[in-house]
Length: 603
Ligand code: HEM
Image (cartoon, rainbow, N blue to C red; front, side):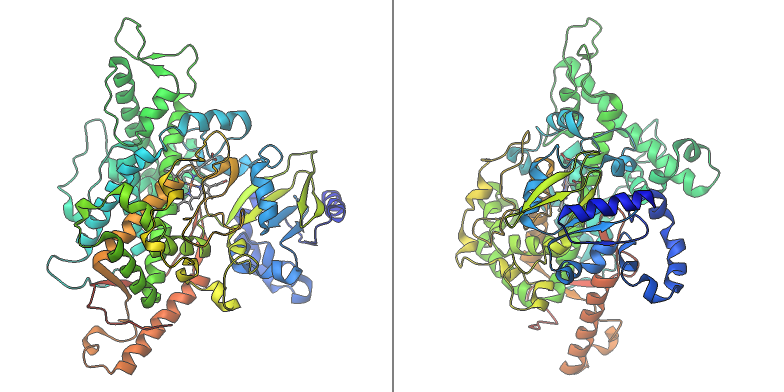
């Protein structure tokens, strides 16, 4: 009660609207056990709970979107709880201040300890320690290296499609788990572009050999590790390695095996450093970590690489960073690809417009002639970029970008000319899903329009698809030591004001892999839609055998039901573990050759 009273008093002094809840939503014990308590709380008379019940579950950012901000009439508000106060922010001016005042609003790194599976890393550190990690990990993220991301993404997207549609056929069958397939594609891209390891698709696979000294192939170790990531994160290491449960055994084997593969790669890079040979291709993240850690070719007489007097990253930190790049680098991009496909299936007219832009940019050239320097800047400024931006506006993978204020140091913010005070020790969450629906900052025709997928809202310049986007073509503003100044979106598209669109965060701690991800997403969309169209699978509502003889009206009815179901799942079937994804039920889709579409409805 004393803590609550102190937090309430600080909220009263802050000048920010606030309301109270009885338990701190992000308290660890509560996060783990809240599902047990919620049925009891739900059974209480609603008069006791109605003002706070929606905010004690961690999913509230998605459940509420912009609603709470609208109801309160403010784009910042405080939630007061005994454990800590939480500042929710959907105001661009406040966000710009929070992301550029790195020391005043540090990341609450206790929240990130679960991703330190192999060691501390650039995502989970703060202050001088973070600067150190960032300095060593950022050099590979250059435009030059994105060329490999581009060619690998083109290759992987083509292979994925070849696995879905048999040669010389016009359509795939229903693909039920597009999210899983997109995840696999993205893992393949980061494995090759980041670590030089090319992974095959099932239809390409000559049964992968398990190398000597390993019990799993690299692919199996990685996919099992990611499938069991929660088990590995939540189980103490001593228990994981000793537990008789099969779940723990599998998770532990994957954890140990992937670590061993990284150690093999690390040893390879160290011996390259010792001989001065260089097999670098693309980002070569492990090579960059080894070099950045100060392990270089030194004359030490015994032919092994020499650590500098003090190795600048420990071995654990090197593995910690390798893991976090894999994690941060695949799930986010995979979600964007999955949801872009789904939204396009629900919006056939937007798909046609996308395909027209792709024809204008890529013409009849075969994929082998698509050129990074020539084509990527144009794709970025076309409907292809608009689809990516609009998807990331609606479902940014990180719904709440976490910041905090230090203990004993309340922080001032200027919002609309007014000075407010964020209490000390406050948890701050940049509420991306709400911000991206804040009607003050987005072109929209109605409230419903703002909530819907309409990539055309980004097309403000009629010549967009022909422009070499200068913002993309240059590295001007690229500064990994300070805030990355390069804009998130193309100059020929709608440009939200600073701080209004932050799917990749902003300022000092903005995403290191932003261009990597954008290049990958643009490449995959271009490969798919240059040749194919995606459609909702309607077979649950109209069986395939009845489809050919069904009337247009019946077909439309089936499509509308499939569309309603997809909308419902996009709103109520989502949940966050690391990023927000569709959990449980899926939306099946089919791919058909362009010109063979069954549904071409305008919304
Ligand atoms: C659509 C794709 C992506 C989105 C939306 C995204 C979003 C984000 C966001 C919101 C953050 C800040 C997180 C925080 O403050 O806790 C972040 C950080 C980061 N991202 Fe990404 N990301 C994407 C793809 C990637 C890729 C492909 C990579 C690497 C290959 C990557 C590497 C990182 C790293 C290393 C950080 C930590 C930066 C730091 O703290 O200095 N991300 N990303």
